[in-house]
Structures are given as C-alpha cells and as structure tokens.
Image (cartoon, rainbow, N blue to C red; front, side, top):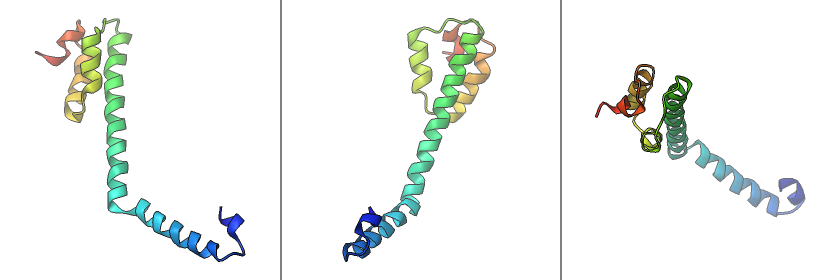
Length: 97
C-alpha cells in the first residue's frame, strides 16, 4: 500500500496511521488478549491429551464425557484429568463424581 502512495501527500498520512496501529499491537490490552489466546490453546491441548490417552488405552469415551472434557477451561482440573486418564478403566470415572 505504501509503495503505491509513494510520491503523494497521502504517504505521510498512511505512515502515521500505521504507526498508531503498531502501538495498539504492543499495548497492554493487546498483550493480554494474546496471552488469553495462548492460555485457551494450552487448555484445548490438555483436553485433547486427556481424550487421546483414553483412546490410546482403548477406553471408550461417551459423547457426554468428551463434551465435558473439551468444555473444561480450568488448567488445574485438566492436569488432574490427564493423570486420571492413565488410570481409569471407564471414561466416566475421570471426574470422580
């Protein structure tokens, strides 16, 4: 875009707009949004790990258990579920209900 504006007065306006946007991406709010996204990604990976361990062990995973694991967003609970996935003989026993 900037290359197309070279030689015009608009190039300076474009540069100012872009420098303002760059500041946003470095802002505390933007950093927090990125960190929240990374945390969600880690939680999703833990949930997938729970299901993978159960499936690799040959433990049948009913839809209700699958949904409950995938909807969990508590890192500590997910860590516990991973450990339990190595021990339970029924997926329903993951949660200790």
